Amino acid sequence: MKEKPILGVTMGDASGAGPEIVVKALTQSQVRGLCRPIVIGDAAAFRQAARIVGSSVPIRAIHRVSEATFDADVIEVIDLHNIDLSRLEYAKVDAMTGQAAYECVVKAVELALAGEIAAIVTSALHKEALNLAGHHFAGHTELLAHLCGVKSVTMLLVAGDFRVSHVSTHIPLREAIHWVKKERIVEVTRLTHDALQRLGIAQPRLAVAGLNPHAGESGLFGDEEEREIRPAVEVARAQGMDVSGPISPDTVFYRMKEGQFDAVVAMYHDQGHIPVKVLAFEQGVNVTLGLPIIRTSVDHGTAFDKAGKGTAQPTSMIEALKLAARMASTVSR
Image (cartoon, rainbow, N blue to C red; front, side, top):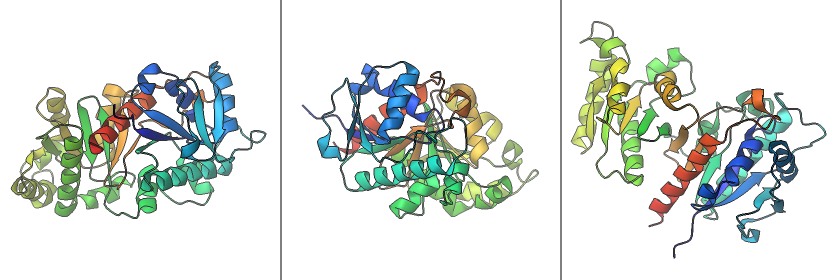
């Protein structure tokens, strides 16, 4: 029988609800039935998180993947000893927790690149805390690209059959407009197409959203569609992809919801994020495309408002674990 994939789960920002969410998710039988999870973080912080959520699950500190037994009744943590509990304050932006979150991601990438884990599943980090710690990245996507030594990455949000990738993500809207270039759109469309094939969709049907109202209305409301987006769609079609567009942003997501498309390529962060979060705020999963490793993540922030209360829901983390296991199993076939 084929072994379940090993997934490395990062702690995220310990001032938030990440550790509590991880504990709740890893005590679910549906998760344990699909993968062999190993947490990367601070073991003491996870023991405290278990107490907060009212779980008696033992937290076992280890130092390397080879020490893991993957007992379904235990949560095993590669203990980085990087949180001082006497200093930890919930819902506080802190360089200590920003540094710890950074170290967890670095360790996870190291293990994934070495082939010791099949995929990374990340808890939310706090961008301000990350930068306070001296690591000047806009978020996980940019940090992971740096650590993996790649330049061409993008974000794919997945909520069941609702999937949205992005031409640009964490940049000001004024700058995002300048990212709407033929080459970048073709690149993101290809990354999206390949990712959907890894998810088992042999012939993905993709839609490319317009940038302007009504996809520019033949140049009346802007010319990016005719100058950059339509030529990109034509190139993608010439490369053998089933691509439609540019399609008006106010209808393209509804059309995917109705089953006409398997994914939409959005032009900027909020264009793609808003429909996903309206439809499936707690179920969404973030996937980074273009990396040499598999990475999924919760599609929510650090939940500072719920940190330390035991009330944060693990739904997105559970879905991220399930999707990572599915992707890892597909790749390993």
